[in-house]
Length: 296
Image (cartoon, rainbow, N blue to C red; front, side, top):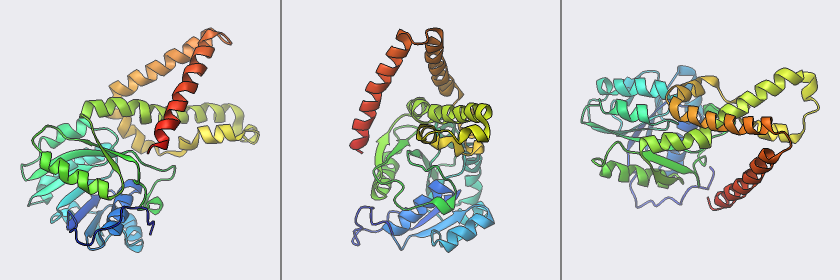
């Protein structure tokens, strides 16, 4: 146990007696482990491939599991934690598999298409979009840990003002897992994370591709720690990021255009004021980033 989550209050009943986590990777598995640590009596249902379920059961991250959404039939909370486009497909199928009332959320990195798809749900299934800004360079359920969300922002993106009770319930839930709830519109979320998360990932992957293709393995033996630190995200799986890019192309496109414009200015004036301006601004914003990071 991590002992980093807020102290459990045994007088407080778990907000959801049965939780189904669909997609038991790093984030889904960490949600389950955090719930298990915070409310040990909660019944956790895992929906994923059989080999993933077997790992989750060995880790005691789930009580039962299967590769079929029918397992989620009696869940009070359904957490969709697969890649974004898979989550959208799963969301549209939930009405066939959950006969009763349930609250549905997701943990995907883009929100507009997810929220739009949720408008087709039957009234008994209420949806509030979610995105925990937490992760690891290593994915998969084996990398899951219960303290992954401690001190990290968790953005909620309700579609409208009609589900305030559900937003409040999820806010209490994610706060108890140690996260810091935030609220944004789906479009504001997708715009912001295009710069905070999507652009850095694409740039790091492109950077490692270019450097590796030019230097080769022999050349990489001369690389310093700066390259290793800068390219920490370069091992991220392409399938997850294909879905992210496909569901946020406009905001990601603008972020890439902004970066390309800066690189072109530096390329056209090597050693000149463009480099001075960029390095000076970067240093200021890096100090700002360190200041706000110290407060989280």
